[in-house]
Image (cartoon, rainbow, N blue to C red; front, side, top):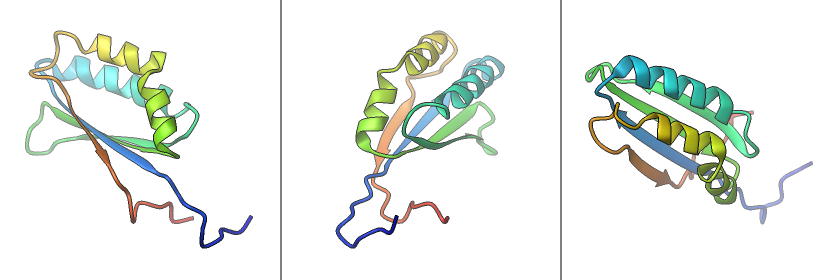
Length: 108
């Protein structure tokens, strides 16, 4: 199916930065979250990155088909379980940001 000039791609990109008081426990929680979230409707990809300069910092970069898919995921059991599992192992609340992706389209 060809794209038409009026077709609008509505990507939603979310970053979530976590600073851990218990990095090993957080890494296990986030790894499970990434695997389960990648199977959610509308998920294009989720990457888990570990900071080289701050060993207890982790970043999730999420790409969703649309803002609606991203919002549905944030209300999902997978997201709620991850958030609850983080209780007591973070230095501070996660830094969550929503990004516009004007050049974040897939290459294929």
